[in-house]
Amino acid sequence: MSKSKKLEFRPNDYVVYPAHGVGQIISIEEQEVAGYALELFVISFEKDKMTLRVPTNKATESGLRSLSSPDVISQAMRTLKGKAKVKRAMWSRRAQEYEQKINSGDLIAIAEVVRDLHRTDDQREQSYSERQLYEAALERLIREVAAVSGGDEILAAKQVDEVLTSRAVAA
Image 1 (tube, rainbow, N blue to C red):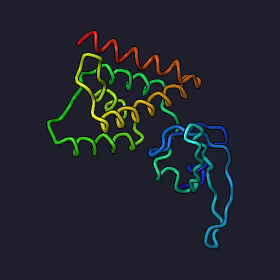
Image 2 (image 1 turned 180 degrees about the vertical axis):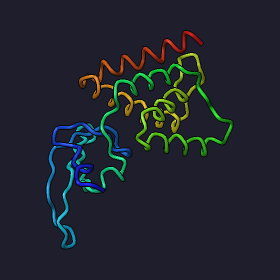
Image 3 (image 1 turned 90 degrees about the horizontal axis):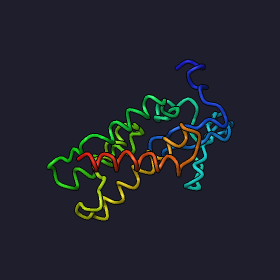
Image 4 (image 1 turned 120 degrees about the horizontal axis):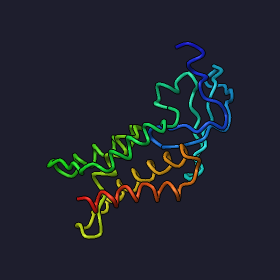
């Protein structure tokens, strides 16, 4: 991997780490690990009160990526408008697939989970695990939409909710 490839992120950049969602690079530091000098991205996930250190040379491999482009955000919103696709597989199998999509860091896959697990008031109640997966996916989606559009999560949540509600009315 070329040197230029690993330095595409700078302090203060917002990034997406697949297993944790949107975080902010607070610094790039050197640390000695087992006798080797390692350069690390220090990423803060303020909402989760968590800090993650990712070796800069493994960043791309680990799935670390820049925030989605406005185009991808639009695509995710279009995905939300679609009809829920619920497979007939057993819940444990579906739950596993949803979990994988959420942790893939792929915004479109996350939007699919939100779409498929979204319930309107007049639909049947969600199970606890469905609700957990739905909320995890929804939070990831909202945080990234907010980060791309300037950081207002309340506004982003409203935007996502309006898309989901308009879909329910159309159905």
